[in-house]
Each structure stands twice: as C-alpha cells, then as structure tokens.
View 1 (spheres, rainbow, N blue to C red):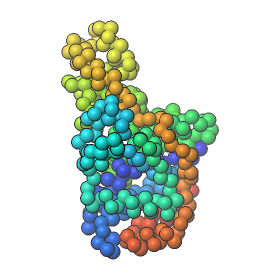
View 2: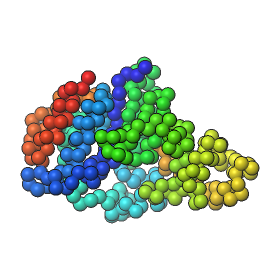
View 3: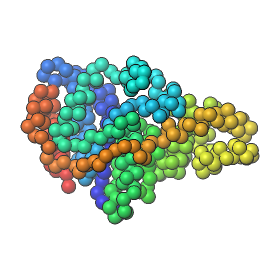
Amino acid sequence: MTNGRLLLLDSASLYFRAFFGVPDSVKAPDGTPVNAVRGLLDMIARLVTDRRPTRLVACWDDDWRPAFRVEAIPSYKAHRVAQPVPGGADVEEVPDLLTPQVPVIVEVLEAFGIARVGAPGFEADDVIGTLVAREKARPAGERAAVDVVTGDRDLFQLVDDDAHVRVLYTVRGIKDLEVVDAARLAERYAVASGQAYADMAVLRGDPSDGLPGVPGIGEKTAATLVHRYGSLEGILAARDAGDPGLTATQRRRLTEAADYLAVAPRVVQVAPDAPVGDVPDALPRVAADPERLVALAERWGLASSVKRVVDALASAD
C-alpha cells in the first residue's frame, strides 16, 4: 500500500523537449518566444490530470556539470560547454531563444506554488535520486508511489518495483509516456533492475554525456555480462579471477579500461544524498500568488496554458 503519489519532474529535460516540440512562433505580446514556457505548463497540466499526484516537485539543475563528475571523467558533458569558467560553473550551450524563457518558468512555478528544488554542486538527476531515496526510507505505510518524469535514460537506474518507483519516459511526448518499470527494463535492455541498468550503462557508456564506456563492449554485451555476473562488481571480480565465462578479448578490454571503470560508477550513479533541504511538496490546489500569476500570464501571453494548470490543480483528487 502506498500513501499518495509523488511526481518528480526532470525540469530541464522537459523544458528542452517543450522548446523543440512547440514552434518558436508561439510568442508573448512583445514578440518574445515563450514556446518552452507554454509547452512545460501544458505538460504539467496533462501530468496532473492524468497521473493524479498528491505531491509535485520540479527538480532543477543548480549545476549541470558538477565538479565531482568532471574530476572523475573530464570528458563528462564537455561537448556541451559554451564557455569554460575556470574555478566556476561552465556555461552550458543553450539555444538563444530558450535562455530568456528559463527565468519566466521560474517565476510562473513560484506563482503557482509548485516546489522547485535544486542543490548546489549537483544536477537535477541527483535531486531526484535524493528525493527517491528519502521516500524509500519512510515506513512502508507512509511511503508514496514515485513517478519520475524525464527524457533522460540515466534515471532508469531508479526503477524499483518493490518501492513503487518508476520512470515516465517522454520518448514519444507527454501524451504517450513510456512507463518504465522492471518489466520494461527486462524487455528493452535485458537487465533485471534499476541498479543493473546503471551497471550496464557504465560498461556501454553514453556519447551524449561524454562517457566513453569500455571500448568494444556495447549495450547487448554489457547487459549479458551484468546478467551473468550479477553486477559490475561481479564482472570485475570475474575479470581478475580469469573466469572462463569471459572471453580473452572481453577480459583484455575490461583490463585496459580499469582506470575508467574505477571512477565511472560515481559519475553514472545519481547521488542519493545531495544537500536538499526540506521540500514543501504538497500539490497546490490553488495558486500561491494569484495576482502575480495573472500578471505573468498577461505579460507573456500564457493565459490558456496557465488556465489549464489552474483547472488541473483545482480538479485534483
């Protein structure tokens, strides 16, 4: 039995998807594009209507390229750096028409009273991982079911059927979300759990994040090895023991990648203990600041999308 439903939004993933999914001809009265804002609000309205959460958090990237990950693997997201900042947070490459929309998203979420949470030095993935870990630590009768909404496969590692944690993957858009649970992981990736997915991802790598993986070991081989040996730790133990289940080539590749394999799990795995404070995450039924919300809707031409969210919140069970 669960106690309500907690909806965790991978905010940047969703507003990037909204930006590219909604034409930039959608503009405010002054001509400023607001396609990402409108798209994200429409996503939230749809999610609240369809998924009926009792709690909602928009998780934020306070640092999109954390130092601890870059120190471990310097290529981590390096291809997305628009401007290096020595000793500080590098500037991410973001479409020019999206950049001014992000502060508007922040203001509108605040006016609604929707919790928006980040953590210094950590990504939204880590905020999500931390909130999931906290929920799982609650007594069973107090624990909510958790839906993580994202377009990022990295978060598949959080899937846990026993704790009622699943991912709603936006591969086909918010109207047709792919529900990723243990059965889906087994069907699509031939791994049995979220942790097994993370181990497979370490071996496979991810060019979109600048993670090289183990050269010569692709997704299918990685999944096969994780299934055979139970975990990345088990695979490395088999490598070191000369286990005959590994071919000579696989053993050589795993040996040559030893330095990478020593640090990659820390990069791939989301943090379960990011410095996230107490989160007032109850789903608001009415706007926290209705006058400000009306003003923002008028200024940015968001009346229809704002109304959809207002109606969705008001009708929530």
